[in-house]
Amino acid sequence: MSHEYQNDCIEVIGNEIKSSIVKEVREAKYSAVLAGETKVLSKKEQLAILVRYVHDLKIKERAIGCYHMPKVDAESLADFIYNEIKGTGLNWSKCVGQCYDEASVMKGHFSGVQAPLQEKAPQVVYTHCHSHRLNIVIGDCMQKIQRISSVFSVFQTVYSFVSNSNTRYHLFLKAQKTAKVPVLTLERTVVTRWSYWYRSVAKILGRNDCILAVLSVVQESSDREAAIEATSLKNQLESFPFISSFHFIHEVLALINPLSEQLQAADLVISEACTLISAKKKRTAKNA
Image (cartoon, rainbow, N blue to C red):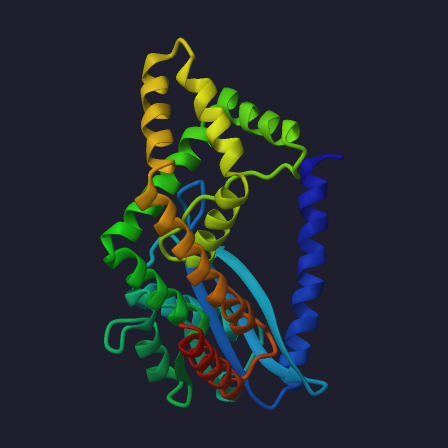
């Protein structure tokens, strides 16, 4: 049960999986590289590298690895991706595409990761993640309408107020059990991932009565600071402008969420992605 033996075992299994992936990519005629960087809870920058290829007539996306990055400038990231792909034994001459999200350090034409990679492998064409494009459009629209952005600000406050206190969190769990509904935990909002917003909206809508019950209890508590915040939140959640905006947001995100999930499918090709987006536009315009 030693953690050292467990880590050794995980490393052996990981190397075997990686070897089988590399073997399949070598057998494929062409491949593409996908990468994304993010900061984890430990505040360390992590870079995930994946490859996309066709094997046995199936489109596959497989992770090569997730790596700690001391530097996250474009040159460092590009060199690391290039050397990591090359170091695994893959041939860059067979790579025809690279795909990243909206981060300027990744997608910038002149100073992003894609530029130095194309210098080393000119045939590698950059494609912006279609699901992330949809995320940017929805996110920008939501944030630029003050009434709607204020609603999400309230959501974030509710999440923090309920989830960051052990006492209030257990009150929320108890309220759900009393109401005889499935026990859920609230979802935080993430600026760069509007799908989190949809889940946050859906959960707050489905557990609104339970949240109000928690706020009512906290209002009567001896903690005056928490009582004042609970009163403010309860007034906002029960106000007509908030309720109307809340339901409007839920309807809009519910229309688009299925498209977001479809765009994240590993076997999706660009022609199908464009067709899905056009169909959703027409359907949404018809329902409007």
